Length: 285
Image 1 (cartoon, rainbow, N blue to C red):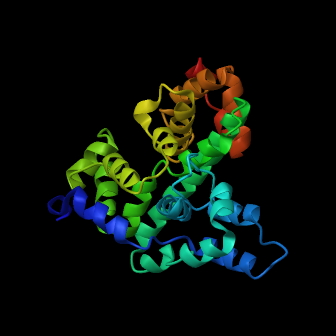
Image 2 (image 1 turned 90 degrees about the horizontal axis):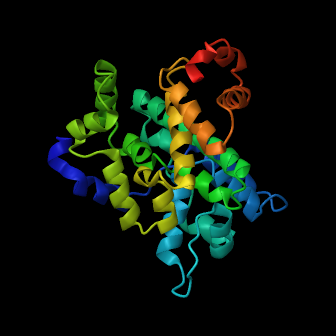
């Protein structure tokens, strides 16, 4: 059924939809809105920037309403708020509807969606930390790119939960088959292809499109995003995942650090020092 609909159908659905956000995002923003002393662009940005869908809603709205004389691309949430104004954002980009309401009868899909959002948040924190280590003054751009790296997958959990559950089931049944191959089998297209189309249609900043594009991984900032996303995706399967040693080596190359130092750094940050340090260090040599 999803194959017959095709990518154009889903692009139209996602473009017309009032995208849902996390209940926690809506709750936190409402609390801020009622407290004039705490209501600032920074405090609002800190909440929005944890929620990938709320973030993309804001950036999409900004792109649709930017001034013709605006020549600088805006990716950072705080900058978008300063340009649009906090009250106009609350009015025109409300934190509603809610993801939890949209999937209240699809609990398995909701759980997968929340895990995917959690992975995106973790990847964004790794990417930001590495960008700071690399003295990237615009580290927030890298963080946002990592947060939105899997935005099409996140959105499809909201709007095509049954098909996404089918993808997950097939992925477990065929662990050696790449996820993109399974997505193409179920939908007729991959999430990467869908994301590229909607990002261009929504006229998201070109810099963001580049940073989210794995095919540009020869660029250090894009490589940062890709490696952060890979690390979180692989470690979510367990810290003994066979792909992790290669991840550590790639991260060490990016940060120009010894592999052992990268393993220790990630172990401390993830709070799983014992789990990683008990592994055979020869895996990383």
